[in-house]
Image 1 (spheres, rainbow, N blue to C red):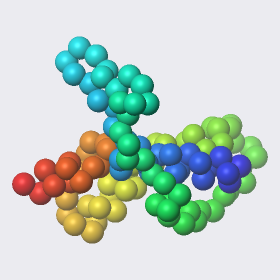
Image 2 (cartoon, one colour):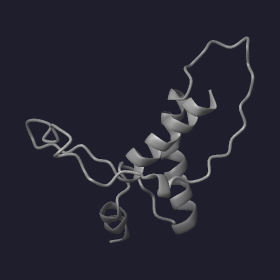
Image 3 (cartoon, one colour):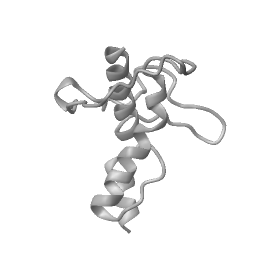
Image 4 (spheres, one colour):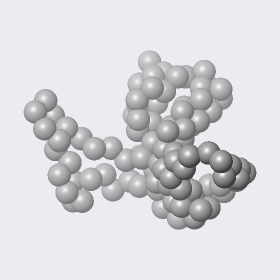
Length: 103
């Protein structure tokens, strides 16, 4: 269970901060791995993940790590806002988008 959660949190951090599917007015233009951004989270970039697992055997299952995708972008955005006062509302939170919010 913890490995599933770790993997999903790491993948969602990468998608939130770096990865971006591009499109134009008519279609997705990121069609293969060659056109996908080179910047993805690497092992050296992975933060320490610390969380508490809560045993709730009487609740319906949600999945193993999948539910974390709903909260990771919000947690990162709120942390940036708390630190800088800059609200980030559109993923990925790339340096260019963060800079644009400063203007």
